[in-house]
Length: 240
Ligand code: C5P
Image (cartoon, rainbow, N blue to C red; front, side, top):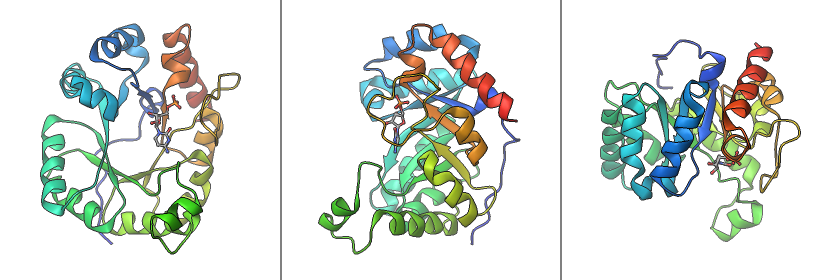
């Protein structure tokens, strides 16, 4: 198994909330970041915003002292994956997602150099069920493939996994202790579930063993985003 060094100290409660900037353009994202101020230190930028000039925003956020999670879900031939990872490492991002194919994960790992970038593997997309996997040519169901890929991620020296809060407990038991578990699908008590199917409150996800919570709409579509973020951070702090 590859050894993964942990360059980062244990995160403070505020650093365990990653706000998903799922907004259509940079201007809306900048307005949200300004409104959230020091209540949020960590942002996730996904494909929509990346293709809407989001890479410039990512650089600005890093320059201003925020941490950035680029959710780009890389998957290509090894040379391309390694070089793309190098670019993301050079810009100073903290997390980057890759699909959990062994070849892809090893290539991304080789692109890290001695940067502080940490890789998160996406095992099986949560939109996939057993039937979708069969249709795509896989001979196993979601549960089995998630466990298999999680172990392969660990063996490839990947730093962490994206997974639903429901999977945290079983993965904690399966994987080495310092594997980072990052969970979307979080809903503070009383907030709108929207399209998420398997949800957990911030406190329950942290208690189950999640390291970081990725939360979008409960913060960004709240009447008072800053107050919502502060309440989530307080809930995380209460678990510690
Ligand atoms: O608004 P909400 O809190 O549901 O946002 C969750 C974020 O996490 C979104 O950016 C979504 O794309 C992402 N995500 C997810 N489920 C996954 C992987 C990523 O909701 N399995």
